[in-house]
Image 1 (spheres, rainbow, N blue to C red):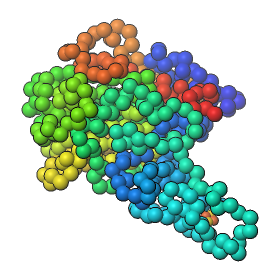
Image 2: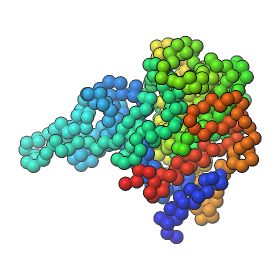
Image 3: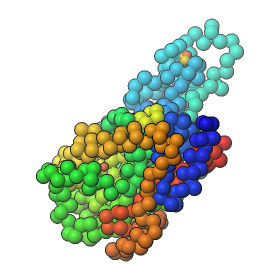
Image 4: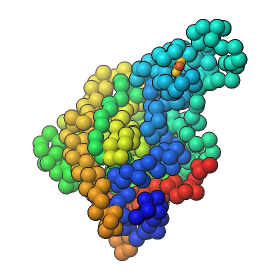
Length: 449
Ligand code: FES
Ligand code: FE
C-alpha cells in the first residue's frame, strides 16, 4: 500500500468518473487528500477574503484565511488593499493579535519589529546597536495576490495563474446581479458570525452550489412548523414560475423566479429606483423576477440572496466562507449584506436581520444541515471506502431526465449552461464543483508552479 500512489489514483479516478455521476466516497474527509487540497486548491485558487465595505477607511484590517494560512487584509494609507501573511519577517511570529480593527502600524509582540500597513518594515527596537548589516528597505511582509470584483475581495497565494476576472469567468454576470445591484453597492452589516463544525469544507460548498433536493427532507420539520410557513412566497403570484440551475465551467448557482417582474427578491419597491445603470436589461429582468439565489464560487465561497419566508423577516444577502481547519473540520464565516441604500432604514434592518438569523448556528435551517454534514464527514472518512472503493452518486440530470423538463419561460439567464427542472432534480452543479476540484488537484493543474 503506497500512500501517495493511492492518493493520485483516487484523484485520477474522480476525474475519470465525473461524467458518469459516480465519485469515490473516499475523497471526503481524507487526511492525505486534505493536505494536498491545502496546496493545490487553497494554494492555487482565488479565495474570498471579505467585502470592501469592511475596509472602508485607511488602516481598517481583519484577519482572514486562505486555506489554513492566516492573512491580515488591510487598507493602507494610500487606499490600496493588501493581504499580508500574519508572519513576522524576523522569526515568524504572528504580528496581529486582534480579529479586526484600525491601525497604521503593526508591531510584532515578540521582539517589536514594526511594519506600516503597506507591509514595509518601519523599524525595530535598538536598531543601531543590534544590527550592523541589515537593509530594512529589503524587508517587507509576505503578501498574497489581491483583487476585487463587485466589492468582493479575493486573495491568491500562487503568484501564477489566471487573473480574478478570468478565474470567475462567466460567473461575473451573476455576481453583477447579486452584488452590483444598486448604485451605492452592498454593505456588510455588523460583524460576521463564525462557528466551527466537524465537516469537510467540500460538503457545504457542494450543498450551496445547487442542492434543493435536500430541503424537503433535511428541513422537513422546519417547513412543517407554522412559523416557517412559506409566508411572503405564497403571496407571490404563481411562485415559482421557474427555477434554474446555472453553471459555468467552475462555479454554479441556482435561482427561483416569480412571474411577477417586480419581485426584486422581496426588497422594498424603491429598490427599482436605485438599480445600477451598468446592469443590462437581461440582468435587470432576472433581478426583477428573482425570489431567491444561492450558489458557490469555487472553492469555498457560497452565497444566498433573497427573500425569506413567513415570520422569518425580510431579504438579505449572506456570504458564506467554508474555512478548512484540518481534515474534517470547517470554520464557517457568515456575512450579512444589504444594499447600502437601506442601511439607515431601521424597519428594513430589523426584518432583514430576522431573516439572516435563521441561517446562524442557532437558526432552524443551520442546525438541520450541520448534523447531516458532520455525519457525512465521519462516515465518508471511513477506511472502508478507501479499501473497498465505494462510490457516492450524483447522477441526477444525466441521461433521459435531462430532456424531461423544459424551461418554463424564455430562460432568464446569463452566459452559463442553464437548465430548469422545476424542483431541481439535477446534480449538475455538484458535478461542476467536483470537476473544479479535480482540475486543481491534478499535479499539473492550473496555478501549479
Ligand atoms: Fe517578530 Fe521577532 S518575531 S520581532
Ligand atoms: Fe440546507
